[in-house]
Length: 161
Image (cartoon, rainbow, N blue to C red; front, side, top):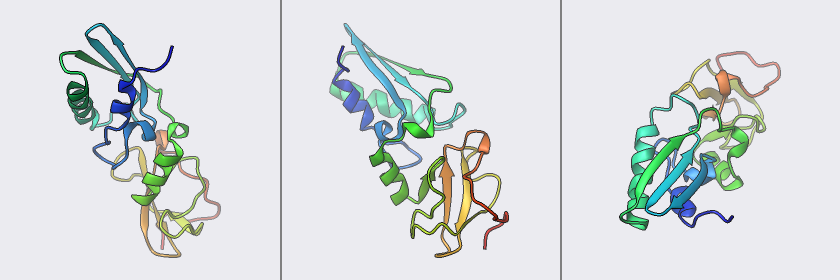
């Protein structure tokens, strides 16, 4: 069975916290249509994501425009999202926005230096860990840090430069 064409509509919806499409962020699991009902399965980047309500609103709005008159159900799958779900385009968009994805090389998204240091235990959200680049001085977050695990950065002190 091929994916529903509405998958592209949902995949293009932008995440409200980071300007990247839900498809490239790896959040979209499936979109199916049965009669006048559309079911969208999404995997939040973290279970208690405060943007879930806004994401659902944006998905419903996009689908209402693309398929008027359909009932829309949003199903949040627990624990399904992994940093490996982010596409290459998603990695590029996140890097441009100043983020790195957990599990990737410990490099500054701005200057690509590997001379980085963890700058604290928690960033702006529990799924983000702050880092500082010692080469260019830029701060950045690593996202997708399950349990706030951090990138393996050898011999660095907490606190940055």
